[in-house]
Length: 353
Image (cartoon, rainbow, N blue to C red; front, side):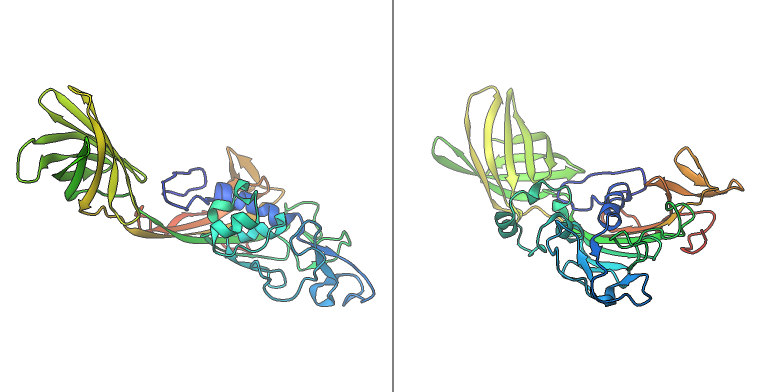
């Protein structure tokens, strides 16, 4: 799947949906609205101005699963380390706590039973996507110096413009390639309660299928003229003289196939079929994606969705209105993507804006 700033290509049985146009755009919401509440309480802040995590007066915000609990130095159970300006965990966990849900247990069925409604959250499908984020103090601080009850954002500037804020986002996961049903099969074709073992030879090109179907021992040779594989579903059409038959089925996780068949032309027969020999194949693919994002300055100009500096040099694609993408790296064994996909002509350093 190609993942560039403005492009999403979806593939069945693949969790790699989190492109920068979605994953990071929405990710900003969990960081920027303030995950904790600052209280000045009876323990004075270190400098009598800023509340710090070490003061042990910062609490998770109302509505968070851990609300009223104190924020601690180090990683919390979801994967956030506010003192260290980082997150390391699973994509869904970066949102679950803030929406009032516990950490994902690893068992989707059990978790759904205990937390009904979570399957309606947009991030729920990405429980198996690993996510690592790092950010600087201007993006979201580990202190409350503005005394607004939240961890500071772009402290000292009215917005993220000119703040020097930056964020990195590293995602990784794996997915299965499409099924390939090419090969020699033996299928049991049932009609009127009688089982007919048949040799099925299939050749798949991309998602199209051709081949032959013939009774074991010879006779009744059908030509597979067309067919397709879509996700876990398979279908193919066979011709013998004036007759046309259609097979529809499902590919199981072990690579076996089964389903129904019926006459399309030249008859009214119908029945079931099951593979007894042969196995569809697929490959476990791995992917990772990395992006750097920096705040624009008030002198930069948005031209057609791309930031340019005052000298007219390209900075990078616009994201969230006040930020630019300055680097994207992607590796995907299934899509043939390897290495750098974009780098800003003015440089990808995090401190040069």
